[in-house]
Length: 305
Image (cartoon, rainbow, N blue to C red; front, side):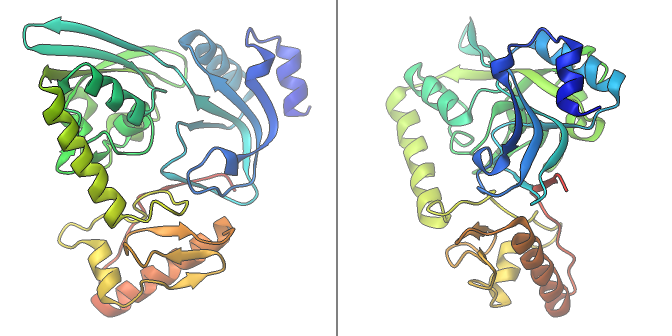
């Protein structure tokens, strides 16, 4: 039975407008690359998520979770099974003295949240505010920038396991490490995040945010589609620095290129395919190992086939 037929037969309590078939994934990723998702479902509440998880488990259907698509490369043949586009949105604030506890839906975009905090004069999020992506994705991989990571502000994280059970983790229980968390390793799905901020001064917060935004614009190739920083930093080396020292800036395969502005970024310069990107990644890995004896790892996630 075709997937579409299975979904229609299941009579799910999900608005049919939230379900799309053979949907091109280049529309949903910052890399602007990727073949079609067999089925893409927008998830904006926990009840829909729970129902889909039950259906996927019963029917043994492959499941892929996507937030803002800013740290992923979708392969050219696309994604089989069901892809969930996490759009649970919520911003609730509760004051406790000078501290402010904020509950955020996993689908909230970081940039939007940063603007809300600026308007409310809340400090502690400025360093994070320029990261492309959603709150859920940022927590899952403990995203960070400008010397701060999500682990520094998270109090609790609400998730669902693949059986639809709701779980709440404290900061410590999240097992945060460099670009990892328990959510990543156990394949939990983030639905809500509680963070702790402080009251600050709007002008000071704006100055910090402007400074970080200016730095990003000057140092990163924001004018081209990319998935952000392509490689993880090494334990005893900065990967972008090695790529630069190896003279690889500007190296290209097809439409994919190592940015001449920042060696840590592979950009989609001219209608690149996922194969172009992966072939370029392989060349970079080989050159860095040959010249420095270092193995470098991808920071971006590969989805699909």
